[in-house]
Image (cartoon, rainbow, N blue to C red):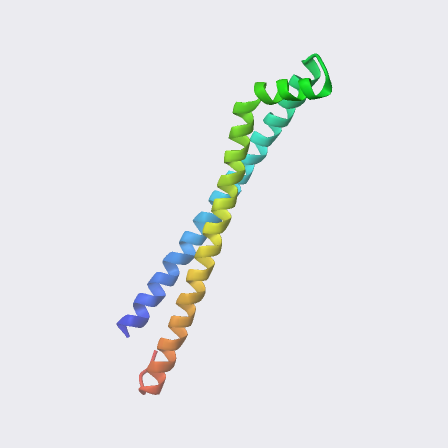
Length: 114
């Protein structure tokens, strides 16, 4: 019975971890959207204000907005990593449910009660 209790506690903790991870993903997505917007606006402004050929203007805009681009890309990477973390939590919950189901079946076969 203590094994079953341990499994239930672990599943409960994983569920709380999943809730926290989803909330963090929402925060990260908001920050990533803000960073992307700041980068795009700054790039457009730098491109319009630059002189020379289209390619020259583009390169000037790239150089001027590099820090914003890096912030934007880091934000996007953080969102991707958090999504992978959530997938891993889902997998761990699925494994825990399988283990719980197996333990329950073994207990029932042994004549125990839940």
